[in-house]
Every structure is written in C-alpha cells, then in structure tokens.
Image (spheres, rainbow, N blue to C red):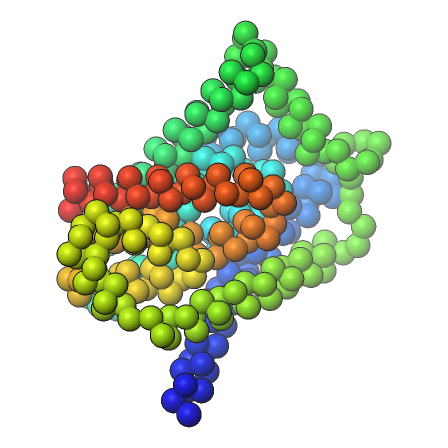
Length: 304
C-alpha cells in the first residue's frame, strides 16, 4: 500500500512538472509553424542575423524559473532556428524550481539574485565562446580566406536550407490549421516527456538524497562532478533536490551551481526527440556537462 501511495505521488508530481512545459512547447510550435507556413526569407534572415547575439537573449530568458524555456529552446534548435551557443546559454541559465524552493524556505533574496545573475552571466559568456569556436571551426574546415565572404555564403545557404520546402516562392505553407497542427505536435512530445519523467520520479522514490549529499560534501570536486552528472537528468526534481541539499548545508555552492548549470529540465528530452542528428545532440550534452562543471566550480569558489 505504501508503495502504491508513493507511485501515485510520483504520478502527480510528473503531471505537475509536465503540464508546466505544455504551454511553452505549444507556443514554440506555433512560432515554428508560422515560419513553415510562409513567414518568408526575410524573417528567416532576421532570425539568422540574431544568432550572433542569441546567447545574450538565451541567457536572460533562461533565467526565468520554468522548465518551459529549455523545452521551447530545444524545439527551436531542432528546427534549425537557434545556434548551439544560444541553446547552451538557455540550458545553463535555466533554474527550474530553484527559485520556488528558495522562496518557500525563506532564503536570502540577495542569494537568489546572485545565483540567477551568476548562472545567466555564465550562460551568456559560455554561449558566445561556443558559437565563436563553432564559427572558427567551420571557417578552418571550409578553408575560406575571407570571413566576410564566408558569412554571406553561410547565411544564404542557411536561408535556402530553412526555406527548402519544395515550394516555388519562399518557404512553403504547411497545409491544415496552424493551431491544430501545433497542438498535435505538442501532445506527441508531451506524452513522451510524461513517460520519461514518470520513470525518473519512480527512481527518485528509491534514491537516498542524504547519502548522495554526504558524498558530495566529503569530496568537493567529486561532488561537483556528481552534481553536474545528476543535473543532466531531464527532470525538475533534480533542481529541487540539489537546492534542498544546499539549503540544508549538505552540499556547497560549487556543487549546487554545477548541478543547476547542467540541469536543463525537460530540454534534453525534447532535444533528443526533435533533433534527428544524434551526434550533434551528444556533442551538445558533452559541452553542457563540461561547461556546467567548470563554470559551476569556478563561480562557486569566486562568488560564494
């Protein structure tokens, strides 16, 4: 009976977490649908032009306390509308349920603002570094002598690829009602998130957060590594557990930040579901893990 009650609680928690993602995903699919239905080459160019400052917007928007932005960013990345750096900026700055837990525990508001500022700042800086590194990599790979010429070429190729829908004038218009189409796509992803999140919540029933926290506190660097790896688990419950452990004095700021920076909520589930390039997904997760671990350790030592 006790196990059944725990499973029921896990199901309720899963529904709560997943339902918070639903409206953000629906909005993202509407935006994608508009682009697919004839927003045209001009809008695509505007989005591509914003890519170079995308990490700035991603870092700021990602700081909003919700799993939804990371899921929406993954949708847009899968549609080819965001750079890797922008996506990582959103992931790193995302705080999930951290703010709600800290407010409920009456934590110092300045502490909350500091964590948000550090995470957003790290996400922005890391996003620009990754995008710069990616541009340099492709510039060397393609052996372009002039960066300006390469930029024009790449932009035109990207516009052509984004608009290559088999239509005669610009981007094609997808048949059917925009909102119905977006709703169907959202429901499919929602059910996928629901199933995976329920399995994760069931695992948390048998996990012992106190034992994990003691290990992290005894071995600080290994604790950061463990927190960063645990942060990759695509569920808001991870940020809740890490925040509770930090407020309870079980883990330090570096471990907390490492876990929060790699914690992308449901974003990683949507990433692997929506982006067919598995190699690109794996590289993105690796960059998130390494960046979150390094930035978490350094920022925790410098600012806390």
